[in-house]
Image 1 (cartoon, rainbow, N blue to C red):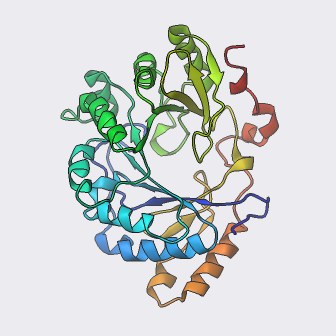
Image 2 (cartoon, rainbow, N blue to C red):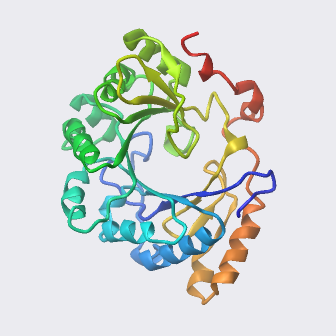
Length: 330
């Protein structure tokens, strides 16, 4: 069992399998773009699977596969299938922008390589706003609702992730929330985190997003069921089949219950999204380290996981931020 120095049990691993993406979302990537990592610097699928098996032996039970855009990497479907077959693995999730999802589903139906859950990043349904956010004139979000139906028909859990940014997509919040009206899915709104190229952008606080939704659809009621593995807080709306979730790292610090680690595509085990603490696993992996040596390195690194992220000093006032969302709707 992986337990850090603050007593937090770590059982959730985010695994990036590529740094490449087919979109250029302004809040994610600088205008000048980024230099992609050479292929030999990226962990092979066999190397990733070995590390995941080792960490599953240490207590990791849930894995979320991310990128960049993970479906850009050839062989991603087989990799997902192999992940699900690891002994002790309880849940495998894929996060995608959805643009390659249709082709992936055609492939996956013949290979049994579908994950347990698929998270789709969707920040606008209006084509004009979508293109303004993604900086891609060809991209179109209109296919996403039909893909949701296809996934539901296959018994795959679906979550929609939206990042509201002031001046870009506040008007989209009701339309995106409405996807959960007739579909049994979770629509989550995530506060913009001050990382990289977004420092000049203005986030929309979770409570403001909730107020917009309540004005359109009525009172949000705290959801009583089991709805996820991470920090999202879920709500029900009258007449909705699905749920509405909020992930608020800015206004509601949830560091005291953090259960996750992150493995980058080049083999760095990152202990916290906001900082540099972690350990490079690629070199020992490629230099012949044994499974036990790698396991010991991971266990020792976990003890350095920070108590709080470093986005703002106010986040250290964890308890002061607790309970804000539970007061939605009175």
